[in-house]
Image (cartoon, rainbow, N blue to C red):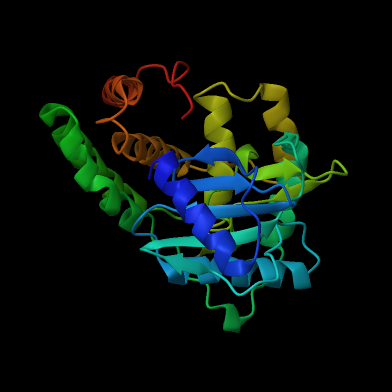
Length: 292
């Protein structure tokens, strides 16, 4: 998805639901193109191939969380999702004109509160299938060096076996699926709000803790004091669990495979992929991994 194709879809979506796209600001473009309209509305447009079923689930999850008075992004009260030419759009109330992330203790509090909820059977949340996602990324390995691609495929198979043998410490249930500081923003009143509901599912709660630990322990994106406060508020340190290295490596591989999709058209992404694969191969530092 390019900015040009995303903009065309945005205009068509706004026409469908009766909104004005004039002055829309592109906030980010990656797995989704995210726009903020002049009216306080966020429009998220999926890349080609994203399913309308997942978009419907996001909207249903948002409406369930609203009924629970849980602080999460609110789905706009229109007929949605909107499907146009193979792309799917969802529309959300804009919580703030700035993209300011919440402090880690507040991130931990929202994750803890989420894990205390029990979803109604009617929501029909899927169970987490982490390796199905990696399998979807595998064709993108054709874009990188053949030796690197072969190494990554072998590493994924080893990781799959290690994952199947894990004994999880926490009770499974509702999870965000991509819980980290980047998915908890501050609203106009400075209160934390959970966003990006497209990975909502059920599964081991450790999945919602591993990214924060990884960002601290391997990438250095959080300080030790920040991480300790996160652990104190949530009440469990995933790094003390023997399965932590497995989930941490999964996240590293997933982040790298996602970037492979950009490697053909973006030299910076290609260089970053090579650097990351070499670090995974040798056990080298991840402190120089650049966020994309």
